[in-house]
Structure formats: C-alpha cells, structure tokens
Length: 636
Image 1 (spheres, rainbow, N blue to C red):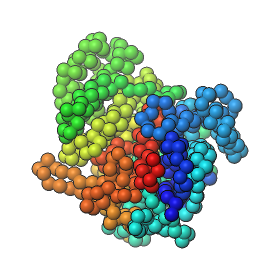
Image 2: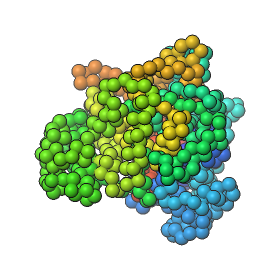
Image 3: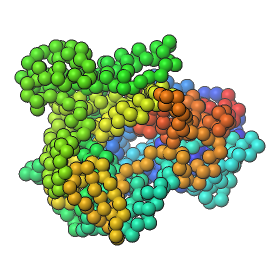
Image 4: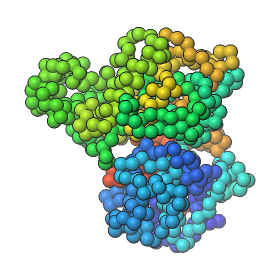
C-alpha cells in the first residue's frame, strides 16, 4: 500500500503544510511514492474565510504589507526556506513594479493572471491598505498553485472538494470518509479545519426556538444576514470585528453609501438606501473596538524593554520548569512599558505638558508600585487630561457615565462623542501618546503568550488577569481599520446605530427578545437578535461530525488550581513538538495532528496570519507538522 497523507482543511494552514511537506521531501532526496489528499468543502486554497467569490466589502484586518505565506532566511524551520513574494510584493508584481529578486523569480515560475474584477483594487492597494478578503484569497490560491508546482514528481496530490465526516481507526491507518462517499486511506492525518462551531448550549437552544429571529454567532459569511430585516430595530451583542462586518454587509451591500463630508464629525456622511436596519448594540465592555492608527505605513515596533527583560529572566535554563504567576511576575512590566511609551510620545509632542524631563518620569515609573503609579506621576503632569490611565481604557463606558443608567439615546450620544476622540487619535498615529501606550499593550500579547506556553502560567493567574489582559489588548490593538470606525460613527449620526452599553442581558419575550444592561435604564425590545462574534473552540461541545468521530482519541488539556484541584479545559491536549493529539491514556496518537486552533495554555496563538520578518509561529507550526508526517509514513 502506498503511504498516504490526508490534510483536512485547504485554507492557509492546510496549504502551508503542503508547501512545507514539499520542502521536507525535496531535502530528503527520497523517491518513495506518496499520495497526499487535501480535503475541503470550501474553495481549495482560500478556504471559507478567504473565498475569492465573496463580496469585496469585507476586508482583512491586516495590512497588505504584513502578510506572507512563505518562510524567510533566518526562520526557525527545519526544511529549506522557500522564498516567495509577500502579499504586497505579489500585488506589486501584478502592477509591473520592481520587487526583491527572490519574489520576482518565484512569480516568474508560476505566473498569475488575476481576474479582471480585481484590477481596480490591485491598482489602489498600498502597503498600509486593508485588502479585501477575496484578494487575499486570490493570493492564497496562487500560493497553493506554487505548493503544488514545487511538489516532487513522485508525489501525487489529490484534491477533494468535499467535507470529511468521519475518521475511523484501522490496523495501521485511518479511514477518512467524505460527504461525497469517497473513502481515503490515511497513514498520517492533519486537521487544519479552523474554528468550528461547537454544539449549542441550553441557552442558545432556547434562543433558536424563540418566535423571533436569532442570528447565531459565527463567521459573518456563514451568518444569514439576509434575515436581518430593513427598517426595524435589531438587537446586537458584540462590538468587535464581527459587528463591523455585519454592519458593512447590511449597509454598503444593501446599496447605502458613505461619502466624504468635511462638516461631519466622522469625516463621512451616510446616504441610506432604505434597506438598512437600526442596530442597538451592546457588548461585554460596551464600547466599540478602537480603530487602528493611520500610520500610512506598517505599524512601528513597540519597545517593551521591561517585558523583554522579564522574558529573558524567566526563560533561563534553570527556570524553564517554574510556573509563572502572570499578575505578579509579568503584568507589572507590561503596564510600565505602556506608561513609558505614552509619556515618551507626550514629551516629544507636548513637552509643555510635563514639569520634568522624560528620564525623570521613566525613573518614577520604574520606582513605583502599580497601585501607586498614577498618583506618583501626577506631580509631573499637572493637567489631568494629559495623564495616562489604563483603568480608563479598560472600562471606557464607566469612565464616561460612571454608575449612571441612561436612556439608550443619551448613552449613544456619550459614546459617539468619545468616538470622535478615537478617530482623532488614530489620525495622529505616531504623534498620539494614547495610541503609543495602547499599542504597547497590544504588542505585548504575543511575547506574553509565548512565555506562558506549555501551561507555564498558573491556572489562577491565567483565568484572571491574563485573560482580561488579552481581551483588553485585543480591544485596543485588534480593532477595525479607521474607515470602519468612521462609518460606524456616521451611522450613529444617521440614527441607524445606537449603543446599549456593557454586560447585556437578553431574554425571550413574546414574539422576540428583550435586552437590558448595566448602563441603560430601559428595556429594549426587538424581533431579531444578532450575536456578532465567533465562538472560542471548545472540544467539550463538538458539533462537527469528523470531530465527534475522534472523541475517543483525544483528551482535554488539564490544569491545576492553586489549591491543587484539577480542571479539564475545553482544549484538546497535543504534543507541542509535533501537534499530535494526545489519546485518553496519555500517549501521542500515532496519526492524528491538529494545527491552527490555539490549545489553551499549551501553545501561543497560531491563528494570526504570518507576518514578514517575524519568524511566524504559524509557519513554525506547519513546518514541524510536515516533518512529523514524513516520519509517520516512513520517509526520512
């Protein structure tokens, strides 16, 4: 029987595994025949999220110059680096512009003639642009062609446009059944399926059976936004990227237009089509994710001197087996780095705001305990408006209204007014002290995550301060491009978006839903509820048929509270070096590998698109998996 590998999922991770597999095979010099099956019921190469046929309204939340799918010299991968163009270089080549020799050479080997419908976007895209998701999908599809073209001749790649519905153990191999009734023999299997929808909870089943219309959480492309009626009040939970997508799909894609208007406080005026709903939006924090700064380039690198020092100290050989209390040992460095970043920019742009030199301010930051930091710095910053306060940004709605409960109209007015400040700061970009401080917080997430990998953070500190820090960093650093925030404010000014504050509570009532919340003094009724967010992975509630079929071959990653009591998390346990699933008896599964889904405390987030020049975690992961696949099938 010919050895065979099955890759389930043909999005960026699946095709990266394919590319790394080809590189490893070429390095071995082996001529042993091998079958590789790549399976996805979405568009092969792009996957569901980046489908090239989707609306061009939805954009990436990453810049054109900050995405690649190729390894680079210096990468910590074990197979040879295969250099190719970043997404922006690929776009430049399509325009006939000069790029790195290695990028042009790869394109010349695999020339691309892009669909003419992309021409206008290709012409307009700059390094700091947010490309459409469809255009990124086109880049991924080209990378897929490259991976196929570079595969050694003795390897046959079979493409299956279907869905895996079960994976069953046999004597020495797995039998992978597809929805089209194809059966694949697999000696090594990779699950690159992305974030799957878990089985609904009891509360969600109640919402689904309610007389009103409930749009369940999910990828906006998979949510049936056509069910959202025009001209009616619609309740929404979520003010992150999922909401901005739903907002765009129900305004721009329904014929509405945003036009520049120097008289409008957002810089935009909305011209309605008459097909828009009226969103009443709430979320856990109650405030929209902050817009990204308009740097007119790739964002600057945050300095993070204290965090880097802590990481160096805690990753020394003699300390690698110590558990880390995030709140005690790591978080103070993150906060102080953010304060220094803020005050350095303030000193550069508003030196009159400080009564002492920046080095004195920095010395005070270092000498102060976190609880005393704000008070210690007051001496040097007489005007309260010039001071930095993390607590303010951690709970902006409370900062705006205190403990008051307002009408939705009044609360909307307060939040919308503050969004003007958000837009101003995003436009200031490098000259915004606020953005510098918050960018430092956001940039701390990746190194802090890597430090705590393999369960190094104590479970108590991971559940508390680490969890809130990561959520806060996402809110201030992973928000929408500036134009989306401007569009949101324009819709609020047009009376089509209202804000209902923090901690929404929803109940089924009559023929619809009722929302209450911490900050509003009224109940809001609507016949439609939209949950504008995506589930976190949770293997305790599997809904996908293939995932259910392998439940007997997985076990949850286990953590321990400070008092010694154990707890099973919602993440599957994997072997970090190979991403093999761990069986219930604690042994590594001989064939099953899982990539792309963060496994709670074990590995840092590998769901972020690979960024050039960063030795991306995702490409390290796919390289390790590809190497182990060949070991499993006996190719060395």
